[in-house]
Image (cartoon, rainbow, N blue to C red; front, side):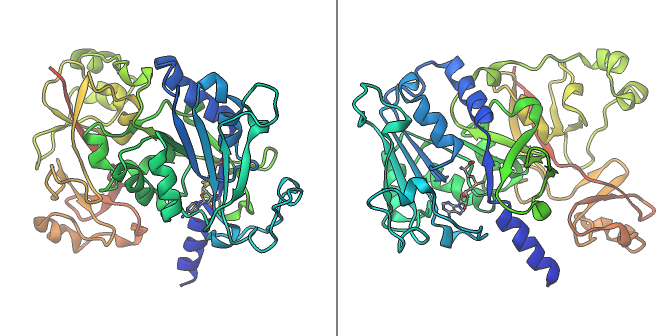
Length: 394
Ligand SMILES: C[S@@+](CC[C@H](N)C(=O)[O-])C[C@H]1O[C@@H](n2cnc3c(N)ncnc32)[C@H](O)[C@@H]1O
C-alpha cells in the first residue's frame, strides 16, 4: 500500500516538470529549417501550460511575427485540479489586473490569447497577450479546451506524463498537427505504436545530445530523474519529442555497414567475435542488438532496439511490428530467442512449453517490473529488451 502511494505521488509529481526555452527553440527550428512557412497563417494552441511563466508561451509569443502566426492560444490547468498540489500563490501579474478574482484563481484555468497589437507599437509580441479565466478548470478533455483544439491548426506542449495516451488520442481524434514531449517508452504502448508503425506519428528532432533537462516545481525526492541541485533541473532519461510534422533529420538515411563489414569493423565485440547475427526461433527475423549494427545488405526482417526510432528514415526502412506490451499484433506472443525464453513480470514464461523451465527459476531476481530471459536450467539471466521489427525498403 505504502509503495502504491509512493508510486501515485511519483506519477503525479512527474506531471509537473517544465520545459526549457532552449529545448523548445531547438525543436521548433528543426521544423522551420525544413519548411520556413510551417507556422505561417496558423493558429497554435499550447494546452497544459502555465502561460504566465511557461517557456512555450514565451517562445511562441516572442516569435509571433517571425513565425507568421495568425493566433496563439495558451491555456493552464487550475491549481486545485492538479493531481500534485504545489504551494499556490497567484502571480503579481494576475493580482494586478482589474479582473483578478480570488474566487477563481485556484479553481479556474486561464486562457492567454495573442492575435493583435494592443500596445499600439505596431508589433504583435508578448506584451500584447490578453488573458482571462476559463469557464472551467482547463482540463484538456473539457468541452471548452476541445473547442480550442478544434479551432487550432497545431498543438504544441509537454502534456502530463500520466495522461500521455489520452492526450495523443485527444490529438488524433481531431486529426491535428502536433509537437509534444513524451517518454520514449510510450512508443510501445498499444495505443501509440500503431501510429508510429503507420507513419502517423514519429520522433521529433530531439533534445541536445538526447539529454532532456526540466525544471521541477516540487521537492526533488520523487522526481523520476537525476536532480542537479546547482541548476534545480532534473535530467530525464528517455524523454523525446513526438510529432506528425516533417523535419529534415527524419529523411536522413542511417549510414550503415554491410554484414561483412560489421563482422570486421563493428565497435561491438559481440558482433565481431560471433561473426553471425542470431535468429529468433518463433519468428522469421534476425536479432540486431544495436542500431548501428543494422547491416545495410540484409533484406529480411530484423528485430532492433526501440531507440532505432530516433534514427528511423521512412524512405530507408519500413516498420512491421514490435514485441511486448500488447503491441505485438504482428508478431507472435511466444517469445523464444535461441536458448532463452522470455519471461513475464509474474515469473511465468510467455510460451507454454516454457513452463517446465520455470519450476526452478530464480524468482528472487524478478523485481516485478521487467521481462526476463530464462535459460534452459531455469535461471533468469538477463532482462529481455523490447524490439521493433523492421525491413529495408527496396
Ligand atoms: C509536464 S507539465 C508541462 C508544463 C508546460 N507545458 C511546460 O512544459 O513547461 C504538464 C502540465 O499539465 C498539467 N495538467 C495535468 N493534468 C492536466 C489536464 N487533465 N488537463 C490540462 N493540464 C493538465 C499539469 O498540472 C502540468 O502543469
